[in-house]
Amino acid sequence: ELKVEQNPLFLSMQEGKNYTIYCNYSTTSDRLYWYRQDPGKSLESLFVLLSNGAVKQEGRLMASLDTKARLSTLHITAAVHDLSATYFCAVLEGGGADGLTFGKGTHLIIQP
Amino acid sequence: DTEVTQTPKHLVMGMTNKKSLKCEQHMGHRAMYWYKQKAKKPPELMFVYSYEKLSINESVPSRFSPECPNSSLLNLHLHALQPEDSALYLCASSRLWSGESNQPQHFGDGTRLSIL
Image (cartoon, rainbow over all chains, first blue to last red; front, top):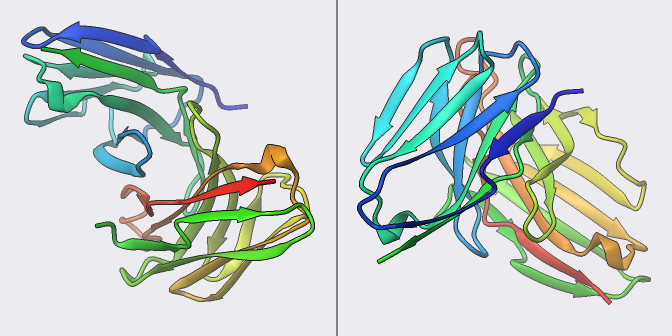
């Protein structure tokens, strides 16, 4: 059974600080996704990571994938309040149409 | 606005009612999904449709009955639900063609379901 573990599950930080969210998974899959969810809203796709060493950046967020360590990271640089949300990593194990297995999510609060 | 449209946005029903959730996408995606999300939990996969055929059923109780009438529509028929079925039900879609199956799943805004 595929397991996806995120940590921390809750993070409160101040604006301007840097922090990293970690996502470990138990399969050999090389397809990892990061999503953002605002309270009461749906999931917004942030990053698609498809190969070992993949690194993607969008604004203050940067995601990376190490398939050998089965680890992905989501790094937040100089956090701003608008980044407050719940962040999920998710792994796609099978080929073709397959469901995502999500981590438990990291609830991020950025305080002024 | 999302490209996956779900209706209704909210639904309150009794345990003896029959209702349906609807999902529609016009992105040409040939894979469609139902997920269930309880409060403060991650989404959990329920069903996967691939080319309008059910390909994955994650041991979901029979009181949930999915249907994919065409490549753009996905329904979830509900009957005799229990209070613990109250949750946010998310529909998603994705590409299936070779080389594109790694693209992200696009989620709708969900239907928030409450069972009385």
